[in-house]
Image 1 (cartoon, rainbow, N blue to C red):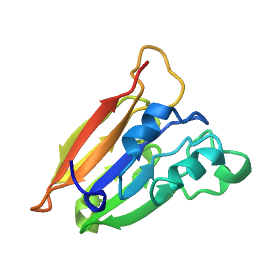
Image 2 (cartoon, helix red, strand yellow):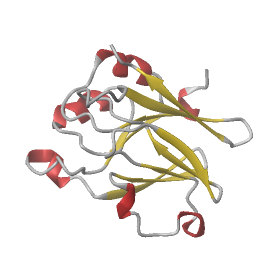
Image 3 (cartoon, one colour):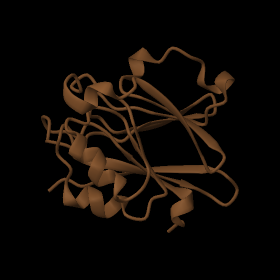
Image 4 (cartoon, rainbow, N blue to C red):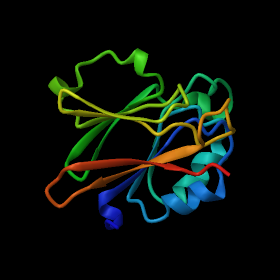
Length: 158
């Protein structure tokens, strides 16, 4: 397992529900990225007890404290730039040209790891209430000794 300085927790679509399994898996991360649809500010407060959190606003974050979250964020971690937004369809920049190593998003509740033009596209799926037959999951990104990004999705379904 990587040191906390080299591991990022990726979570999205919590919709106000933060499961104990998610908290346990995120323990030891150096940073947590939330891809939107937080639902309740308490979710971010609990995540912040584990590591610094960068979160964006999703389509359900319309009232209260989560409504003031930004629509997008850019954050540097271990020599890599990550672009965070909720809905990938709203991406309006060339990630490679802009110098990003990865984009983190949510919205679809469908976990996905893809590489396009040298950029990691990572949707950790939904860690919140079950939707249809989709898994309940989150993601982890390890920054290797050579600087490479290794992404994985972890199913936390009951």
